[in-house]
Length: 256
Image 1 (cartoon, helix red, strand yellow):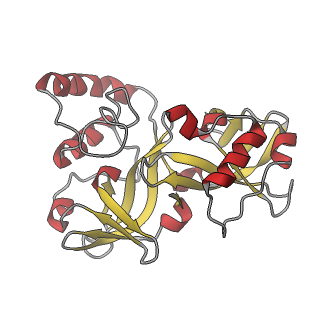
Image 2 (image 1 turned 90 degrees about the horizontal axis):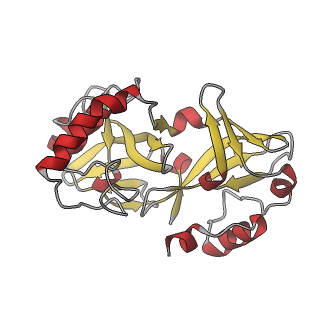
Image 3 (image 1 turned 90 degrees about the vertical axis):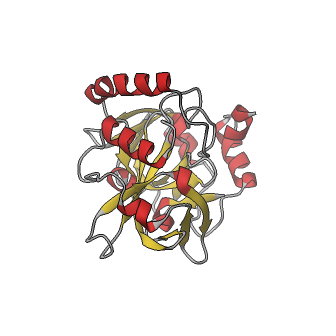
């Protein structure tokens, strides 16, 4: 199922023994375009502290009740490493958080989730792997950060091959893999009232300093593309028509 980030924001986090807080945003990486953490505002429970919850903890989403169900206790969340969400999340902070919960490092391994394809628990890493992860952490911090907040990227310009086509209005996430399948583009004054979907695979480059996303599409292709209706569920039939329009293989075909 695909879920909108805008819809997800405000959902309550339900631990095994009570409420944790509300989803405020998502952190995704710009390599796999996959959500790595939910940013959760704990409100008055932890005096306004914000915590990061990995999709590896999520056991279900109740869209009708607007709940994200996690396999954690309130005490686990309360004792989790403190991370300042107003600053870039360092690799050391991620390692501390993932090791605290017993989750594998997603950046170490052949798949989108490191040793596994989906955000499910994997066998704990060996001591050798742990040593290599720690040894690489300092170097990783010297490189460009790959985690970005969805709330920060909303509003980024979308640049096609022949000019601007609009701005990022939302993200559609696969709630099984937590991969961002689509960027929702508001075409603004160019095509008033029309929204279209662009796959991260079609992104050529993101100019973070310029707040712009460049895509390998022509404006004419986008103008004639099937429109996206926020009130209609994005099903496989619609996705097939969209991929056929752009003459691209579906993501399910590439995974086969």
